[in-house]
Length: 129
Image 1 (cartoon, rainbow, N blue to C red):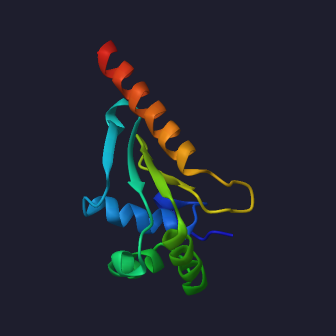
Image 2 (cartoon, rainbow, N blue to C red):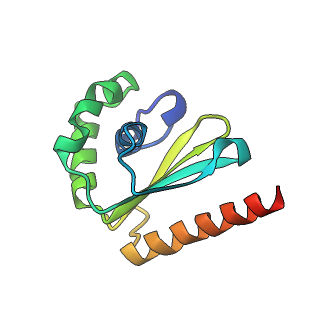
Image 3 (tube, rainbow, N blue to C red):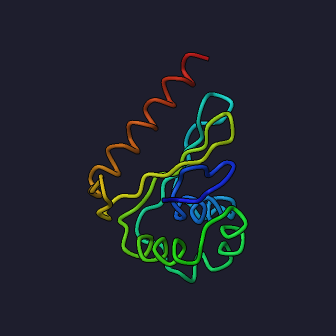
């Protein structure tokens, strides 16, 4: 069971690690805004343990155990990509693609299709303003 606290409540450790990368600007694309409901970014490809090493202490402060972090590092190193979302209340969640989990096995094609849906949705919101 994920132990994330605060903005990462009920999220697996990879969400916290990806959030740290997003703060460093290490994303492939961004869309939306928390002012219009949600900000999202996409990570294409895997993330190496070295890329998130600087995020580990922060993740521990949010309540993640070393066992959870090791599992997250394995999943991130094998993923096809991820979409990270932050809503207008500051909560953060992620969808990791290309890694089988207990309930989801997202494909890389689904990653791109889902991303395009969010981009299109945000473009429609911008047109309404």
